[in-house]
Amino acid sequence: MPEALRIGVNALYLIPGGVGGTEIYLRNLMAALALVDRANHYFVFTNRETGADLAPGAPNFHVVPQHVRASVRPARLLWEQTLLPWQARRQRLDVLFNPGFTSPFLAPCPQVTVFHDLQHKRHPEYFRWFDLPFWQFFLYWSAKHSKYIVAVSEATRDDLQKFYGLPGASLRVVQHGVEEAFFEVGRRRQESELRPYILCVSTLHPHKNLDRLVRAFRQVHQRWPEFRLVIAGMHGFQTSAIEKTIIECGMGAHVHITGWIPREELLDLYHRAFAFVYPSTFEGFGMPVLEALASAIPSAVSNIEPIRSVAGPAALQFDPFSEEAIAEALRQVVEDKQLRARLVRAGPQQASRFSWKTAAEQTLRILELAARG
Image (cartoon, rainbow, N blue to C red; front, side, top):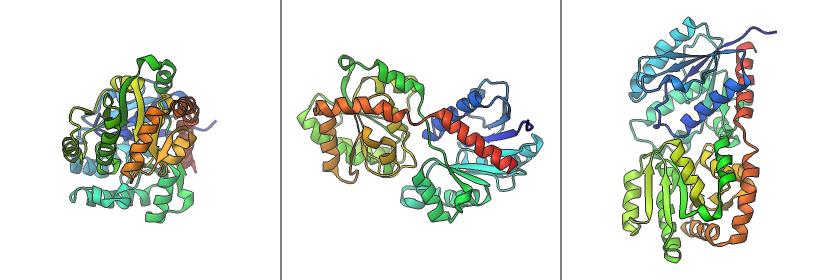
């Protein structure tokens, strides 16, 4: 039997409630790793914002606190490049897992780094001028220094090959899973409990296309004045612009932006939503789409990759660059009873193809290959 590995987990990037889907990814992946792997030892390097609860309570998971704040990005990156390699050597790591894009260049062991997307290459215009050089420099060298790169979708893998010229042998696709809690929401949903609102779970960033969504919703609201649009997610770079669009459209009383909310509140929003919409023009994966499908909500989503493949036939798909197409899709998921019934049945079936257990097993095989290969 092979000797147990010592696996480091670089969680220095994590700001609870402040990094969106990458936090959900890490928490769920580690919980699943704790279930599928009792043999190897995990050393989770946390920052000053993150509590010890980030790591599962399993005896083979160990928290190694670091005295740096992720919210101070230059300090975090400096710590990652200087003190984290020293910590890796001190813990005698066999492999270092970097789930948040960046990695130390001088690590004393092989590394596996996760790329959730390449937005900084596909859409550099969405980045602040002083942030973009950090993304360009550190992600490029992380891609070049890591033994294996995990892409969360085929689309992201294709971007890694296109922009960084990485060999296919160094790339592995491991798709996200979806939490059982959302399937439970789907099993509990009753037509009589639904409320007249369309839910969009999204960070308020430019590529999420929320300004066009608000304008499209105005058309639906004219026909169904009792309906609201609820946008749940972190405030982002486009928050002010979206709020301005809401006012200009006269939708101030009918569009509600929640900001970041605890997971239980989010589950309740899924439970009562009449429909779900996801109009993004760019994604690395599109986790909220899976959540909505598992929750058995009639959903309308962008027909871009990887959302198109994630949703499959279980959601109505539309052109996210067309306001009229979004409005028509919203009208259909609200009005068409036969369509709604079909999507309610198909959603959980499609979502069941994605599992955090499978993601953990695939990730573990990559970590073992990096350490022992």
